[in-house]
Image (cartoon, rainbow, N blue to C red; front, side, top):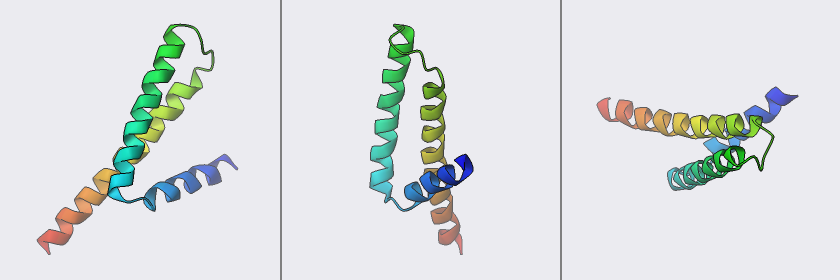
Length: 77
């Protein structure tokens, strides 16, 4: 069940434009900052939230890199 949700999230990200991915990445970094701040001040006890946000950032950056490499290889041919 959890695996299906991850695939759905990844597919949603794949359907976004490059500009929307940049916005999502910026939003994820802001969310990471907020989560880190809350954990440091003991306002939040759910420590897995930080991991979730970091993985979301990794997903977005991976998609950006895939698109970058696809553009480079398309330009070589």
